[in-house]
Image (cartoon, rainbow, N blue to C red):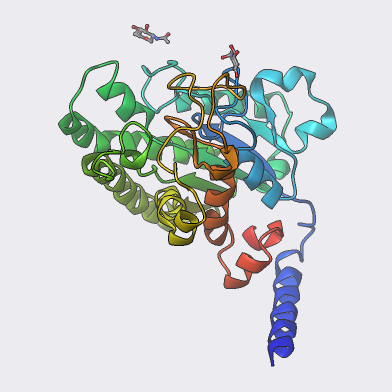
Length: 324
Ligand SMILES: *[C@@H]1O[C@H](CO)[C@@H](O)[C@H](O)[C@H]1NC(C)=O
Ligand SMILES: *[C@@H]1O[C@H](CO)[C@@H](O)[C@H](O)[C@H]1NC(C)=O
């Protein structure tokens, strides 16, 4: 019975493939990345990880190499440009003034410029996926550099999501057919915000993230109703990280420092740490704001089902055509 079930699943898979690759869609989708440090693989100088990041895992899901970073585009070969391009920058938000003052709108501008220069054609874009990472830099900027309160964060949520939505429409306007966007993570469970003594996440920050995500999902629903031939996919980073942190089995097998940063040099770390935890492979966070390679790998496995909308996609997740 077991074998029969598997065979049936395989047959079903092949018929899905036949349907979705009917019209010359054999080429794997290019990946364009826009957003913040969760996906920036070097535009701001460093990866904020000891190794692979979600960008790398999602590119491999699409059978693509990690896309070239915008800052290195002139050194990239034609074949490398085929994989897509990463415009993301650590510190970016949607507001003009942020940690780096390089808003998402400016990144979309970089993308537009590449299209104007014919690096990517209309057909290329139709067969592309945009990954948008907004993990909340405007909120963090508000409460740190601008000394704002959590009330300010809640008050800011609606205008931020509206601005984010405006950027998403712009990306769609470029002709990208699939646009996947992260929800904000459970910020209150991040190192520094998680209370080691109470063994609790910061409830207010988590609530703020959920509020953002609720509005974002409502927005995506509206965007998906506008007949435009493009689809928006919500990637549930909140629950993926939450699951990685609270998995009972992981707790038993020794992820003792799940809520602590592995890199001990600073609040934010590049890939090489002077001081770090003994077992990075048992960590989730690399620094106070970012996943370690191990964390990204685990979180990625929780994201795969939303990358592939069919239940089979979970098992055959490495095939990009299910996503297309
Ligand atoms: C961003 O712009 C603001 C306002 O113009 C300025 O005060 C701040 O220093 C700038 N930050 C960076 C990183 O350039
Ligand atoms: C990148 O990270 C390394 C340490 O991992 C650090 O020495 C270097 O200054 C960082 N570079 C930039 C541009 O931030």
